Image 1 (cartoon, rainbow, N blue to C red):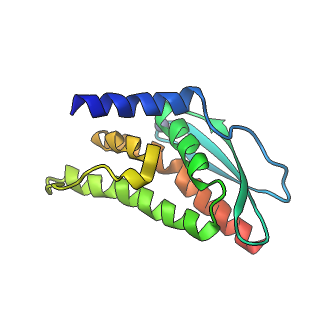
Image 2: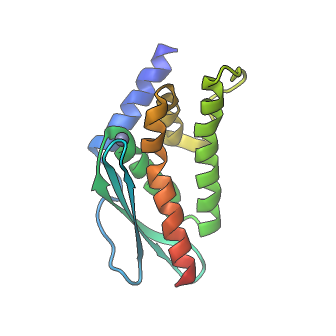
Image 3: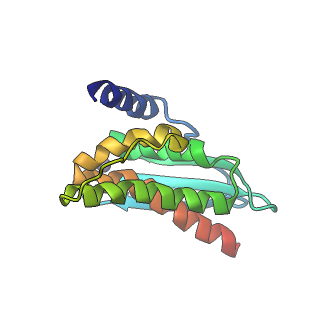
Length: 156
Ligand code: ZN
C-alpha cells in the first residue's frame, strides 16, 4: 500500500515542519519533564498545565532531534490537549501498544487483520516507524516524557 505509506510520510513531515504547541509554559503552575534518547540524540521537553478538574488545559513542547521524535511529540501534544490526565495515560498505553504490536510482528508473528486504528488519528502515521526498530525509541520518547510529567503533575 504505497499510497497509504506516502500519506503517512506526508503527515509526519507536516508535523516535523509545522510542530503543534511548540514553546514553553510557565512553571509553576505548569510542570516540566525532559526526555533524552541517546541512541539518536533526540531531546524532548514537555510542559503540561493540569487544571483543578484534572484536565490538561495547556501543553507545550520543546527540544530537538530527528523527524520521528519531533513529529511524534507534535502529534502527542495535539492529541492530549483538553483531555483529562486519565485519558492521556490511556493514550500513552494505546500508542505504546501500537508500537509493540509491530515489534512482535517483526519477530515473525503474523500481524494479520492489523488495520490502521483510525481512532488514533495522525498517530497512526507513526506505524510505519516500526519497520525500523531503532526508530521506535524516537517515536515513544515524547510519550515516556509525558508520563513523567503526568506523575509530577499529580504530586503537585
Ligand atoms: Zn530519533
